[in-house]
Image (cartoon, rainbow, N blue to C red; front, side):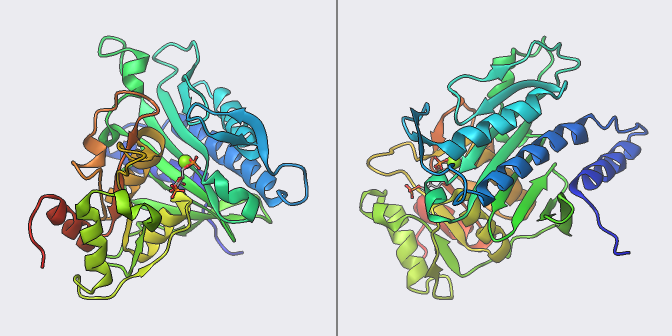
Length: 338
Ligand code: AHM
Ligand code: MG
């Protein structure tokens, strides 16, 4: 029989290895917690697969905290995560793109050790046209009471993340995660209902051939970004780039992780602070990118160093391969590259 490794086994094994080094046993709490996420994403994927059949497409009729129309699937995905994770004793708070305030649980700091931050259905404008969407999550450790309140724990810098990951619902359903010990990917095997290991210790190529950005915004980007994209187009980094832009961050990021290149969402006139959200979009993907040898910046500095001020805070977000990102950083710092 072919040997498979499920994501649960993988997390447990990783934890056991890390714990062995310190002579302790893994309690399994963390893998139980992550199984809440994988269960919810399997529920979401099952719903998405039926999107054209059941009455699940379209708007739900309400607006979320960002003032965006909530799609029915946004609501379903959020509820699936809240339900599956709310039942885990180790969860102190759940922070979702869809909810204005964190959902908190009255668990003492000893038991309720973790905070999960998530974007339940990223790229949901693509749902009605049968194009990839995703779920993004980030796990934070709650600080001991003497060091900070629960709210302060939620607003920790990205480099303190305990784990981060995403699921991309595409031709197949793929889960990618890191706990700070490399990046690993799993593919949902629908015949057994489990995420099965596809690749361990993924590395982003040092240079790719795609740039990915909503170029319709270029006229209102800061000048440096226009200059940078022109450089990529004109062969300034030693090759001529092609462009790919799906408009689902998870899918655009996943391609960048696998094939290299760069994804950019610079500030625009309309969104002077950027469009993407720090806590549940930029931070988790920045953590994964760095673990895979890539770089992520807001343009002003490393994404993972930003001290969050609010749970729905936005940030400009640029992420990708070392070569492209170093060139971007030089241009943003005003160093000539020609
Ligand atoms: P969402 O979380 O409401 O779906 O919005 C975020 C999405 C990202 O997936 C994507 O990168 C971006 O918005 C696309 O924005 P635009 O349409 O401005 O290019
Ligand atoms: Mg999103």
